[in-house]
Amino acid sequence: DSGVTQTPKHLITATGQRVTLRCSPRSGDLSVYWYQQSLDQGLQFLIQYYNGEERAKGNILERFSAQQFPDLHSELNLSSLELGDSALYFCASSVEGSPYNEQFFGPGTRLTVL
Amino acid sequence: QQQVKQSPQSLIVQKGGISIINCAYENTAFDYFPWYQQFPGKGPALLIAIRPDVSEKKEGRFTISFNKSAKQFSLHIMDSQPGDSATYFCAAATGGFKTIFGAGTRLFVKA
Image (cartoon, rainbow over all chains, first blue to last red; front, top):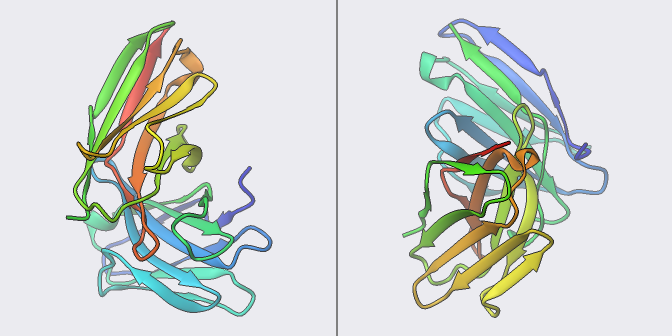
């Protein structure tokens, strides 16, 4: 158990809908990362937050947004969902925002868009 | 320039054999190279990592070999066991950039 929690574990929704994925980092970790994992594309970095502020941005679509709250939990919002958004979404946390820090991954949220 | 290319995509090894996964990068600014292991239904977890000031790092049955001039690094799993069956991701990072992950290698160790 990495200490990172993600909810929900599974999510099934329809095209065009909007969903929110939630992540609680390990106690003491200030940085949160979001990744998308699909079958043929490995781990795609979406976005990173450090202590409430956006730190780095990856291949995140404009339909997606995220934020980190004062209690350090983070939410990833996915809107106008398309079939291709079906994937595993992982949250990871680290002590600081440095890439040299080990990232601890949560168990993931499996999103299925029908 | 920020890509990390990983091969093979999948690998089948007999129990007791050596599993070898290779990665290559282009950005010479990368100075931290972790490997992550992911079991089915779980998130990735850090397995072993290396800095470019050494050519090899060993932890138990897992060894990273690093070739700075060729911009390549590899993971060797000695005496591979069925319990090693997982997906392995190489990655590269440097202080000013996000961590870039390879596409992953699915390893299956036959008993």
